[in-house]
Image (tube, rainbow, N blue to C red; front, side, top):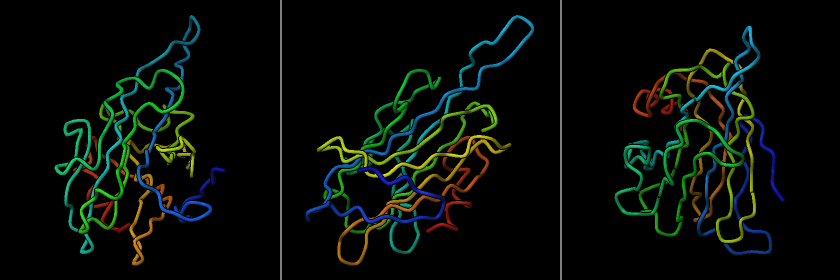
Length: 192
């Protein structure tokens, strides 16, 4: 059963009935708002990009997985590919994380989304991020991204390692501006 998260809400990712998660997928989905004109409405393409930023306990960026680097250096995090339009149903972009393979130094993974083409979120609807147990395909948590606004990026959520080795997800939902994850790093620092 999925948990619908509100901004700032945190949920444990321990499996019901015991055990721990092994492979999770952060999915990002969105639709472009149809442009209305004199002769009806027309579709537009919006290129949102999902990124996974891996941080150590000191808040230092260890690695980044994004459309220009689809795999972490150690192979534990994999981006499934860049969707340039948002067309289609379901997840438009996904990042798969093999939690047991993450280096022990990685304590947090922050997921961001930005509009590479520069359109702001007022032109986006039905945007969400969700965390899925990749072994069972069960949706664990979902966070609806607030669509309207003049911002062109958002710090979506973070998955953090606890002292006992378990994991939790926190919905962040902080608006930001920037075309790539590098532009978002100052804003991300406040959420580590």
